[in-house]
Length: 210
Image (cartoon, rainbow, N blue to C red; front, side, top):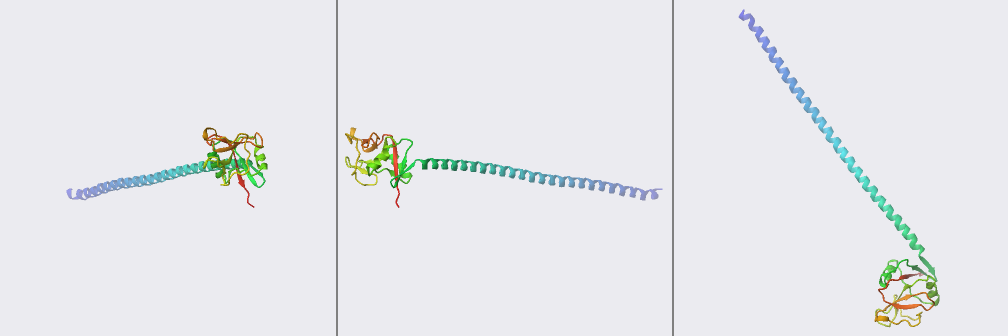
């Protein structure tokens, strides 16, 4: 009886061990599948996260570019408007273009403004030119000064004063500091020597060389 039962026990043990191994293999397979799925999910999630981050960055870049383009457009529109208005203030007379300012500056600031416009403060060479200036009925700086040497009046182009339109009693150099000339439009003879630091309108002249 003992001899007959021995093969049965061995078979039972083999079956039990086999089932145990199968359970272990199944557990290992389940763990491997879970790890694989987790790795795949993690990779997909990270890829999606990177894509979303890239998309957000591109969106921000597009918004920044759009803002920059909008600002550049607005600046160009402003410059175009300023250019149109600026061109409207230039007047032609007898071979020159004249710019009549719309605000007030010192004599030196006025000249700087003219130079930036590729012009200079007006040099008055004739009675007709003086009458042309007076029609704007403004007190304006012109390009005449004796700042280098008191009493020696020179135009901004370096030429000495020959034809003048001083108002009666001028120049009088009140307070010993009136070195720049303004025209006051009262009549043909309307020049007055004034303190260069006073603020006036001004007139630029740009000669046309044909």
